[in-house]
Image (tube, rainbow, N blue to C red; front, top):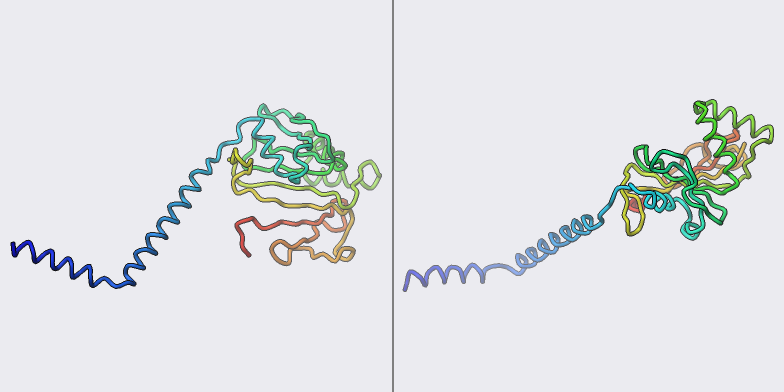
Length: 227
């Protein structure tokens, strides 16, 4: 009987000697573990899927358009078979150029319909085998002659990322970001007051100043960047 009593007594003393701080630390550690587990569980529940259907391709590419314009935007681009087609008709001023499903990563764009002649000419020249410099030169000459025209202020929205997975509930592409291009033909640093390179994250700057392709670049921070 005595042998049984001694271990019980020692256990009781150890329990009574535990400080309130020890109990508090134990609770905090437990809470931290639970928070980590909850986050891992949430990430796992995100259930990203590959963009492997035309419906998914259209829905994810529409993320490049302003939210209130997505339902009426026309969608063009390569389908799953590699053909350049109209994927969906639209009835507003926006055209969405869908991601090319046969290229790595994700890159969709949205622009005002008045930019389509300029964009279409670029696609036509590239299909003829012209390189970037040749396309630049030819469209530049056609801008000078009046064959092509860009109204200052027309904007290109680009939704891009390294991954080809999306959330079927929100249509967001994993790790994708938005970048904006505001076309200002022949504008310069002097005519706009903009720097030739970004002064800080999220700041506008002018690219290709003085040319027909002069444009204001705005590369917003990702939603997870707290700077």
